[in-house]
Image: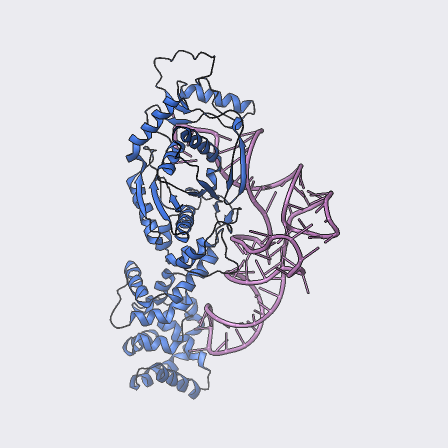
Length: 469
RNA sequence: GUCCCCAUCGUCUAGAGGCCUAGGACACCUCCCUUUCACGGAGGCGACCGGGGUUCGAAUCCCCGUGGGGACGCCA
């Protein structure tokens, strides 16, 4: 049987890091087995779903390079199908109308909680042999509930967590259609996973409790249509924030697109996410394609993982070092523009990137790091105080005039600094440090002769003159 | 409260009863390289939640604690 997996986000917000990992693992599992990966938008919560969120999810998937073979399918466009299935369940007696009002149910819940019981529907409208139902109140629009088995257990062998079983007595009759007729999540999932031929449901840990209900519905459906099969399930544990707390919209969860804004490469984010909860021996650095070849469900950690920005940074630094220079040039032009820095022809952008890329964790750091090639820096006061002392100014002037005459190459520049330094009985850093401060504004930079070579003679002399006069 | 899940260095993890004196990676520390800061190189620090079993032998299997998390919606 061909492997078919799906990613089924609800469009109530952006694609965050946890969702992205779920999508990545589902994607990789399908790729690994030569199957299909399907995108399905679960938008049955009309009140909270937005087209902007749909777009945000699509954007996130695209940025990460998670291509889907089918979809996006929208549940709201499958209403007729859901209603049809609900009708067959009603006809088969595996679903029934329930006239309990929201207020009634709320009171029931509170009472049960007060009695330290698990809150659940009391089965008031559940048809039972030999038992007459109350007369439907005229003012209540009924919901439709699934008639969950009351005896026995539901069990499945979770591909991540192993054997899980839950007594049916723990489950109640869940609502599959609201009073307004729209179907609810657990029901739609079951119909869709079945219709779409999903073979492995790979999803977040928070769905473990939904699984027995879904299996029961699938089994009820299978009695009506023998083609319906229960898929396999793999529940991924969640990703915690750096502080070990649960990520939520209020706490730490950010859009994957934020990583783009912050200067992370999608390769780094993918690689990082792949190693969060999954491993392949001691391998740490690998591409998305390699991941798709290696991925398996056997090496997924069942415990929750904490997000760690340091490691992401390390991977990002690695991928920046490896990146295609043309890609970086395009990216950095945009980032510099956003910083209101015009990339001039005077200084080669590829050369500036090449000189600086080994020193940064993010593309934003890279942009900030090469900014002084394109605009005069603000001189750091502390650095100036330490290195740009009065006694160095005559020597700086001496160097400046010597530099005027030379062929503008790093070795020649180095030679002149060396000459100025030794003729005054000093060491190289004594002049290199103030030069750094003058030219870059701060006391850390790549080799000063290389910085000077790249900056250009006119600009170097201009900045020196500005500083010593 | 009830049900379900989880538990190896600070963090991500390797580990399928003897290969474990518990391995790797990030971070941290030291040294080397060096013109500053990085990069790079070489070292170092650092963990099997506790208690009982099972076994000749347990990080690994079982039970009980403890701690963490999730779920209990006419949300998904």
